[in-house]
Structure formats: C-alpha cells, structure tokens
Image (cartoon, rainbow, N blue to C red; front, side, top):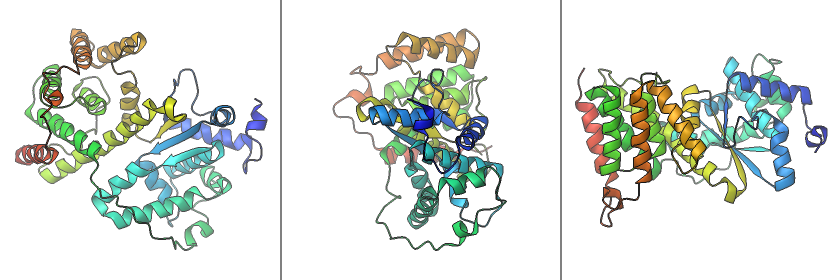
Length: 362
C-alpha cells in the first residue's frame, strides 16, 4: 500500500512526521514487541498498514518519565529537550494510530502521592492526548518556547472518576519481594557470580522465577552491564531512602512485566506493543528479557551471548547453563511454589525483606 495513502489527511506534513520520528530515534525512546532488526518502530506507516490490512491495534505503554513531561505541557514551565521529545512521541502516536496506556505510571504516582493526584494527572493527560497533533508538533519542533496559552489556560473541569489507583497490585508485590532480595544480597556482598547463583537458588527453591526481576538481578550484579542507578540510594544512611529506591526499581520492573505479558499475548489479541521511556537501562533490560530461555534455539543462542557479554568469562557460560536448567525445570513438583498447599504470604515476605533493608548499617 502506498505511503501517501496510508498517511493522507494528517494535520501535519509527512516531512514533519518523519522529523518527529527522527527526534524519537535519537533518544532511543521505543522498544517494540516485534523484531526491531527486521521492522523499524519509527516508521509511522507500519502501524497504519497493520491496522488497514489486519485491523491490528498498537498500544504504547508509557512510564513515569514520559507521563511527567506530557502532563507538564499544560503547566507554565520552560520547555526542555525532553519535553519536546515527549511532545514528538505523542504526536507521532496520534498520527500513527497508536493508543497510549498510562496505567502503571498512574499507579506509581498514587503510591507516593495519593489517588486524587493520580486521577487529576490522568485527566490532564487525556487533555494533552486529545490535543491536535499540530499543536504538539509545533512544541516538538521548537516553534513555541513554552506551551501555547490555550493549552495551559483552559479549565480542567473533568468528570470525577471512581478509580482506585491505590489498590494493591499483586504483580508489584511479587516483584517487590525479589527486588528486596536482590538489594539484601547486594548489601551482604560477595563475588558477583556467586551472589547471582544465590539469587537463582532462592527463586528456584523458595520463591518464583520472574523474568523481569531475574534480569534486574543479572544486570545489577554483572560487572559489565548498564547497572548504574538501578537501585538508587541503597547504601544511604537514611534507610527509608534506600527502600524508596527499591520501590522505584520495582515500579520499573512492574511496567516491564505488564508490557511483556501484553507482548506475549499479542497474537491472540491482534495487537502490536511498544514501550516508551527515556530510560536506557529500562530498554536494555526489556530487550534482553525478550530472548529469555525457551525452546527457540535462536533465542537461547542470544541468551547465551548476553550472559557472556555480562561476565566475559567462563562464569557467563556457567550462568547460562544454570538459568537454562532452572527455567526448563520450572514445573518440578519439589519446588515450593509447585506444592499444592503453598500459599505465599506476600505481606510477610515484604515485611521481612523491608526489615532486612532497614537494619543494614553502612
């Protein structure tokens, strides 16, 4: 199908749309559920073609750093480069027929600032999301030093929604337990590959294997992975700051977990899925998770290469064999999680894990 037909009747020119895509690419803001070596996620007609031919819906899961910039577009603040890239991303999505899912970012906000603030932010986001792409494009391309006055000055009289963004998310709880364990092992210290093995042994024997948290552990303990800032303030004198950093990492992993679930269900749901973030570490983690051990020989080969890159030694090969064995043996009835009478008390696991973090002293 001709590109001009796919992109006709847009409120911006094709050159402008390609300019938005170029801005996004320069910040590496997208990870796609499809093979990014075969299909370029920054080609807008890709999504319109899938919609036209297969009635495929495309959803972008947005993290907090994107949401914050979108919401800030209605405030009288200085427009930074990241605000422009965020505006470019939203305009690109509007023109490409991509829907935005901000749910996890709103749950994360509610966890620290309360439900009313999360509802208010969702209302402001809907205002920005329904703004004409022409306005967002003008912001992205620098035609405005700040947000247009009609965007910042119009009243926000939204219908009050009955949404509880403070509800406890079970996926978040499950991941939080593992991130607390990763933090505790880090504080304990030891040789990196042995610490990772202790983490795997614990998940196999006494808990659950969660792809997102496993990859976080691998990235965090590897001497050759992008781990800076993964667990912020972990060794702070203020132990509540340490816990705040652990919770922040848990929200990132929860967003990745949700996105991964969507990506794995995309054939049955007839969707394409994108993850949007400025966070390069988040993209690195999720792209590595996509080749987690399974029956696909190509994926296993990539997983082998990732672990060798992380450790650059025979330790990487050993960890590859270890993870492969554990994931293939996930249904073993001897594992605690596979026993019929096992019911994890996440409240207790979390309480114990937080106590261990609070009791550590530098």
